[in-house]
Amino acid sequence: QVQLVESGGGSVQPGGSLRLSCAASGKISSITAMGWYRKVPGDYYLIASITNSGGTKYKESVKGRFTISRDNAKNTVYLQMNNLNSEDTDTYYCTADYYDHSTSEVGRHWGQGTRVTVSQ
Image (cartoon, rainbow, N blue to C red):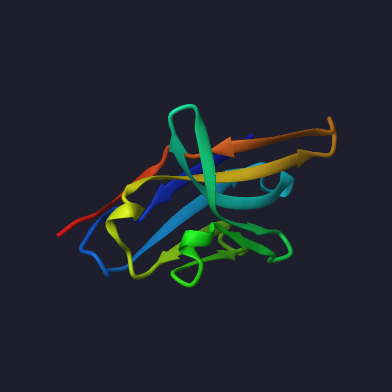
């Protein structure tokens, strides 16, 4: 099992910045990638992800504004969010994709979410 604890959410004015953090603990060795998602009723979508080798993906609307990074020594992934606007307001969920070599099980762990509010 992997436990994820997010932090860094809050309120900011349009044009401002926030940095989200997600600390992973538990069966770290099983993690293959980490990311940040937003949820809508019945669905979710990727904001940004980063693999163990450092490969990144971004939702088109955040490219150039958001940067995902990871500190392997701290087992932590970050999402630097710049030039925020009202459409970025939401709860952001940290995820950890895993592969269990002993059982061949694959899956995704989710954090509890951290709230980002962008308003005047």
